Length: 427
Image (cartoon, rainbow, N blue to C red; front, side, top):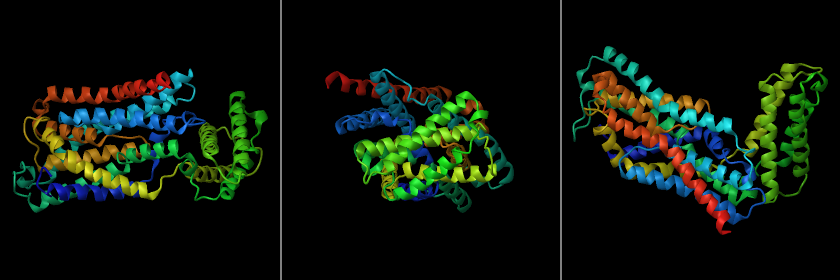
């Protein structure tokens, strides 16, 4: 939009199209990761009003702070806001129950590192990318600042369209999935029988996968296995028994669906932990064949408990397009005038998109969420430094941005923590 390559409306739909392609083709691992920050125990045996209020705390905390910062033109991160709100509400539940055993702290740290790394990687990618383009491309028009009304020449226009398509695709494959994660979390909380597991997959098929897992586990030589690993095996045996009992029921109610989801998640987690540690000391048969069968069965079980209906993907694509139409003016003003001493030229716009796409793509490989606005800001800052030196960057304003980003996650966590505690005060 800023380069006048497309009109605002065209840009929003262009972004929406490639964002949709990213959501559809990249899988749902990031969405699942975000939803799994909430222990299933939060919803087990709880009333529908409790579950609705939990989701309300997450939504209202993240939306309020995101809206507040956007009013000041700060390109904040809805990913940070949502992640912080989910963590805060989960911690609040654990605090109310007096136990933090179900909180996956290692996973929270992994996600936090991913969120912090994306803008830094974009910054580091942008510098060599811009320097390389300046050596390869001799066209002076590519390094000119966009004019207010005139579209760019053909070559800069083509490269900007390609780089923006890559960014939009990366956004859909990662950042766009955060909405899917929150929506499926809400649906699991309010309608667990319909959304906790994929009811389109027959229970007989899942029972077959469980039998495969049990068959492989039975071949482990437990006498030669370390004591702490035997304890993990015992947990896996317990999960297998519970899952088999639940699969025998004619229909799953809300509570049973949540228990089944929890038991399968625990089984997959513990089995993968054993595989990662190389703990499968089989008595007999081909080890590689057994591990291959086990891995396939675990993937099928994951697909059973981690699914998102296709119509939700369509919904998110539409919402993201509308969001771009609503907020682009404030954010563009920040990126255009406040980060560097000079407005970015065509080359910097292309480089910032490409570096952001790369850093978000790396985050997606590790199934952790990343902020597109933060990655893009990091890329643009790197391109400013590469073109005119580090002194051309408005570090004072950038420090304000970084502080806003840094405090978004904890502030949302504190807000959702407090809102959820109100439930126990007034019930």
